[in-house]
Length: 388
Ligand SMILES: Nc1ccn([C@@H]2O[C@H](COP(=O)(O)OP(=O)(O)OP(=O)(O)O)[C@@H](O)[C@H]2O)c(=O)n1
Ligand SMILES: C[C@](O)(CO)[C@H](O)COP(=O)(O)O
Image 1 (cartoon, rainbow, N blue to C red):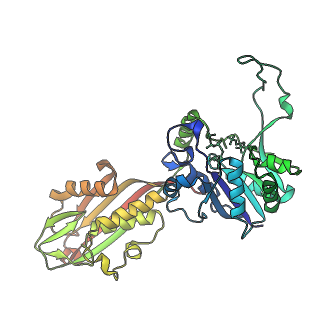
Image 2 (cartoon, rainbow, N blue to C red):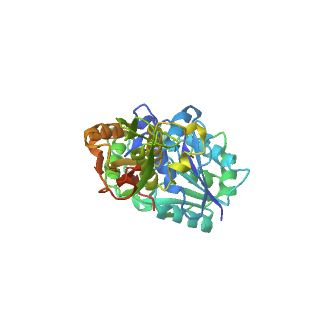
Image 3 (cartoon, rainbow, N blue to C red):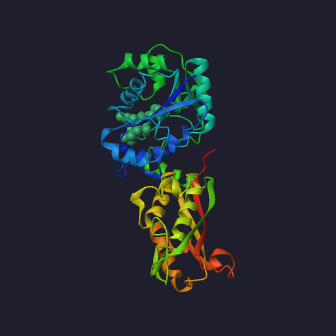
């Protein structure tokens, strides 16, 4: 069955405070909205993921979604959650799914199990919500500051999202309720239209970030999350040609020859760029900057490394370490090593301690030994969000 997901993100996050609406705030280095969208992307059975946002939030949304593939263009929400969901449902009407999951952007910890259960429950019942038994005793509050009689908690549940429905059922229910935007979840909209709503087990970890305290707890949670540490290698060679200097690791080094190449022939930055691209499976430097393209003629290789770093960041990653080995008989690398480390750290936006530059000769063997050119090997280590 074709299943689409609507992620409602058009709220202003008043209760969470902090200026920027909570769904665009970083959590462990990644925007809450990005985390929520990623939790659905690529899950079995999911066709499209549609964010619903406030039009004024478009720049924050674009930043949060940078580089994410498989997400539909955001649509404008309304003044209430109910109006935002309705806008999302209408936006799917031209190519309607069979099932739709409706989820709060403010719940970034939705698990693969919840997504699978939501789909199965909608297939079976037409309308379903994840529900949790209450662990606290519930009291009505009559006179402010004093408890009144409480309901029997045995018959109560707290419900979460994703709430799942047959698309036509929930769209008709939302249309019928348009204009009376007073309901806080979609189960209530379905019930108001006369439908029975089933429950499936919720997940205590699937909390809705609502208050500043929720963000403190969530930061603790993400600090423990499994990181995906990936490393990859790069290698590059350029031949000596006419000239009076070489550029290595972004540093100009006087030499009686230059290095020939389409760009500035900086083998060190090229090898590091390839290593970084390798960590995210994003091809190689020639794929991103084809030598056939005249715009890269004589280009500074800083650009290539900075682009690879930007791609790693767009994938939600952090560069943990860059390591390069230069292989040549001359020039001597030692006197320039620190300058190269500093320049590489500056381009990559990381601290000096995360960059290493080494050098070796090849004992006069091979093309580097014959002083025909310079080679560089590199490795990059990045920390990426865990994606199963
Ligand atoms: N007009 C609205 C209001 C809320 N939401 C979304 O509905 C979800 C649940 O709402 P809530 O947690 O109440 O978010 P806010 O309305 O932003 O929070 P607050 O009430 O504190 O302002 C959030 O992902 C929120 O962005 C929405 O899409 N459109
Ligand atoms: C949809 C919801 O998250 C289910 O628990 C909840 O009803 C949203 O409520 P809010 O009033 O928008 O915070």
